Length: 454
Image (cartoon, rainbow, N blue to C red; front, side, top):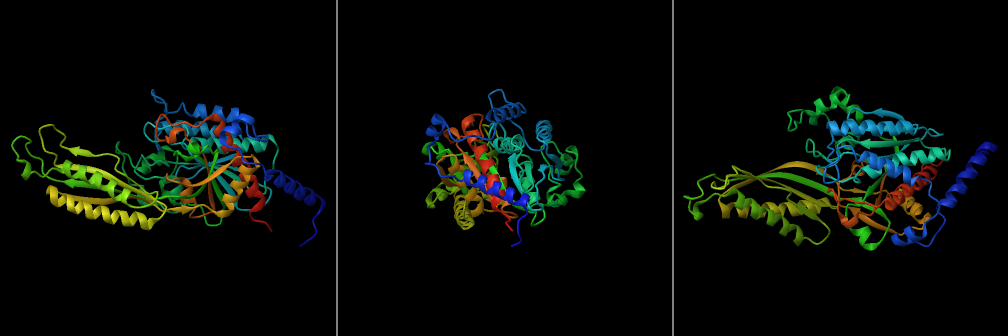
């Protein structure tokens, strides 16, 4: 190993001291204890973080609370302008890729792969103010904190705001990160929304050229790691009074659109034993999905989110019923096994109700495991704050899921009150938001120190 020059020796010493301070062992505190007694000095500014989250919640604000801010919408465009201004105020070099993802770069001192972190700002219909927003504003707050303390990092740091994570628009979840990971391509550009606009049309509205869509792909080796701060969207952390969750993996998802086709006929003159009632079949199908999923041991889930019935008149037997089926689990084999059993149940129901049910694949996301080194950094960051941790899976699809295909990935969870998400009642306390942002700050510094050592 070559001898270190004096300046390098000082810099190296500072890194080692910083690392030692960060990983200093503390007795883990429960969530309530952490809030009551305080914790080691925070580097992030919790008031500044709260202010940006409150301002962001004004874009698409609903009267009942929460927001409706769909990806690829005018409301989303306005919110993006606000977020882009925040990134520039933090000194980031901002760019927008051809899929509409927003990136903000902070240069490092060495030529190393980039440490990427961030989340999304789009919402579901009548969604909440924390899903995606916390990870996005938290990432920008980390940059502010680094600047406030004049901290230089070896790796370049890049904040990302992914586009259309929720997938309510165009029916594709994690669209922006999926394109960046190379899992979605030009084949989706012609998808049409309810307004008759294609994805290509919306990209033009976002100032992008659809002809360069594939240029949004992040080349292999570009990233050192990807870290995402997120609300849990489940009850585990709150019920166990644990302030920080360390994600072990993200569940896979498969979704189908199913249609039960019967025959619409007069409700008063058609005998009960001669009906081809599509709604009756769909109703049995909904319960069949629930029964099959419940019969499988484990933490898997299955959902039928709606049933669309035609012709929809009180005096007409339904001739058509359309419904989605969604299955999630950490193991793709479990999803496939449940789907096979559900299809067998559908065949039986078709015979009972004299209808025909067909299902077409709609969306798919593969399970993803968190990287051990990234998880270790999150654990160490939480421990340095005296926070107890809980390792758990993410039951929700995440942008980190796509990033796991091209880089080491990790996620930090903070509690969701009542386990409620995708709802105006979604809530995470400001203290928990600050806790998560501080763990993100320390995790990034630990990863900067530990990764790509020479």
